[in-house]
Length: 378
Image 1 (spheres, rainbow, N blue to C red):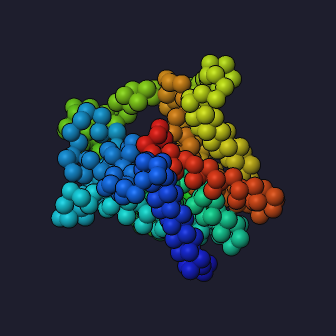
Image 2: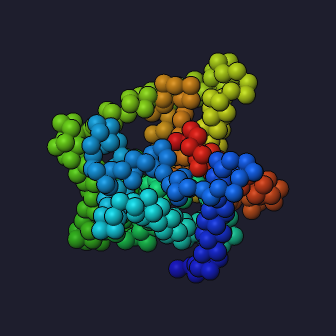
Image 3: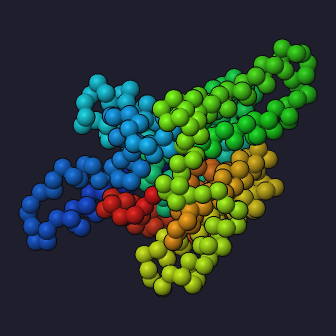
């Protein structure tokens, strides 16, 4: 097992957290306080990360699934918040949500380092976690969103599969399935790793079953939430059927791309609000597809399969709006294998690495500030 550079990972984690705190402080103060004023900021400064879906993830632990569309937010992250925040009181939900999100991200950095080191060595692993930490939408790992938890659980599932810890992989997959709907797709990478290890597993029936049975835990997580949705909404797939509330619908994989091109090049005037958002989401989607293609022969096939499945789930759920690929810039964070590919490219091409070190933090600071100011970032 490779030695993990614990001190370096902790430094990267803390440095990026401090940077986001500084963006929050200076951005909020300088853009909201009256000019030439000595008036201190109010308590809203401390809730400036509780916007968009973060508000749902901190409200559900307090009041439960009250609104019809709340079931779109899978239960594990809210349950973790509630288990800690309930005894502390109403003031703590935002703080606890951010604490869980950040600690989960720290755990994900260690796990992804090990996966990337297996694929390309120490330098590639270091670049992988660096690019993930400074990616333009990495502030979602800081806010009370479930992105960090999902990345930690899915990446840990792959690490368990690589180590042939089948029952641990199944349990982690079950938890991931209680965090995001797409986690049920982990069944396919699990089957691939099972197939690769089949020669060692066929030695005895007991060994074979001990590797195959944990696979059932992954869809069990989804099934448990389906039962809950059936109980409270009368529809076991309410988390999917209610996506129309956000204008999402089942579509052909190319629909979102063509509609984005139409919005970007024809429908939206140059410099419009929607044009900028389409450019960000469309650019992230193209980057995802490109990195999967470039990493096709570089990465372990199960990693590539996982990346392809996540991208397909994004493309099959385009939105009927001025930004058809809405949120893809956030969902890209969940596709950890593409960051390994990007790290390999960055190691091989120093100028690409230098460009990313300039471009990523600049856009990260800009988009973080937009989120803090409650501008549209979902």
